[in-house]
Image (tube, rainbow, N blue to C red):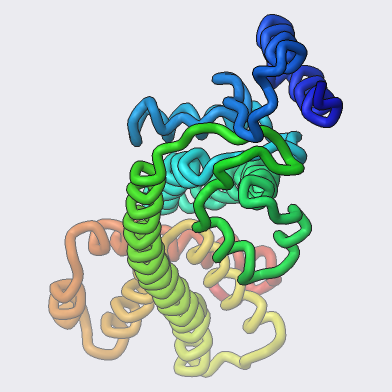
Length: 319
């Protein structure tokens, strides 16, 4: 009896790759001398190759098997099983990569989770693929060499990492081609998504910058008008007067949009310097929403002026 072969079968049974019935059958074959051949078929639930199920169904079975064996770094994985699982992994990556177009935060989170999950499952999968061509799993530490090894055909005979199994190399090659096609599509999609997100972020940045500039420009429009009017009236521009004008501007800006505050200041200035007839020409340049808000802002201006005059101690002067 081949003790080494029996130890390998026992190891497969302990990992759950072989059932007790399958182990007993293989053991009996060894005892009867039928296991002397170096080629031994692996069980359907373990090292077995799924190429007999076809590329599509076999790929999904290989994908599920990869998850079931995520802790197994001692067995073998055929060329078809590795690339079949890669088809499904890459296909899911293609789908998940579209999510940032719908929700950026959700997309980033899902991509991170899937990337981590993929690493945990694919690493032992790659190690077993190296074992399948009788290479040490430590080759995964080399960046380029394992990538080349992953394309190699399976060992036809049993090796130090486990028994051999029948595989359809044509279907394995087909799985490789499908994976590469999906990967090219994935890469192209990621470029498109990156450009789209870059444009979106750029547009948002420009909008924010424009809004900030506009706010800075219009946020003190009423304050400037107030100080200019006080100067025209011959009033002293004291600290109290400055505080009063700033107070009015603050109350206006807190209640109305920057655009309404700006238009209100222009209307007040025009009314004092050019007369009421100049007002229609000013407001005609704005839409109805801005005009309505400006009308409310102008009514509130008097209320704010009285309140701020009381707060700043200028009420007697304003009256």
